[in-house]
Image 1 (cartoon, rainbow, N blue to C red):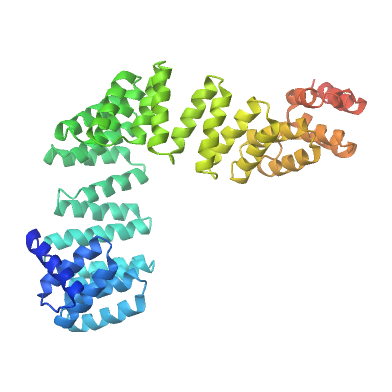
Image 2: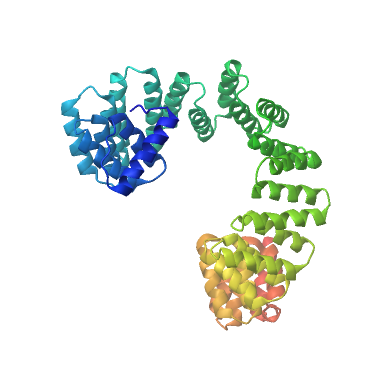
Length: 470
């Protein structure tokens, strides 16, 4: 569908239409005016007003195919696929050569996850199209359908065709690079972007994407040059300054990185990413006061950015100011209580402060949220042992065995715990198993269970194993 590009006329039509709705007067609009009004409302998410415009439009222009196609769009938005298909069949009978009918049919199929059928329908639309611009749009739709099917090579082909129709179609350019990225074809992406830049040398988007590809293969010199060209092409391009800052950080040019990040703060509202990176750069330069200032600004700017809270918490942890670290990680947990990284830090800090019950709670929550790292299981079990919760420690370690079978560190702990619980047979089994797996970890027993190591049975097992290994 084509839309009237005269903005003043469109604005006038909208004003008249909304005035009509308020007064209940019936005013006449031609079908193109209704199309522009409906398009405006759909673009701005005003579905109710779009539906009113479609209804009134069809009352005044009942034979309009385009207005009925808009009605199909509404059906699709409301997941009324049967009604959409019924109307499409009706329109196809009237205009079997209208490619827009096929495009809408493909839209219905796509929404029902019938992506291959949608592609076949779009290919039929392509055969009917007589407009090269329309071809580009259809190529883009086919590319998106292939993305849904995870057929990235096919998607890549169609996005390239799309870009060939319109060299300034940056959405397709981004999609092409996305496909290359997914296929781990950085070199091919670089070759493509360089070829594209030969004919579009001032395209800041392409320079930016080229820099990202060089960054991915750790060619920081060429990455930096590409971002410089992006900035030359558009000296207000915030993304290029951010990426240039990242390159400079990799090259340990922290002062220059800060300068680039600060330019982004001057060009637009501060971003939490830039503030965080500036903080890290100051930290690398040993300027702690400035580092913490920017970490503070990061969490103020975006309280939901976990990297900000983690940075400020780790900053105070490194300074061994555990009380302040705990203060900030508690604030973070209050904002997002399901963030596993927060709970891991919470547990570690409480453990440093010897707040064992809180530390155990933190490790338990960390496990509940899916962090199954070995040290999480071991730290929790060691705290439970210190708290005298031997049975809970056993249960924790038996769960850990499911993820880390045949692990000496777990087996030594289980052996010591079963001896503590006076279950000697189980203790002997796990201790023998531990010694078989790695006898060098026998210090775990003396550290966690000093009284157990004095038992004759335990000493005999350790001694016998070491003799046989010699």
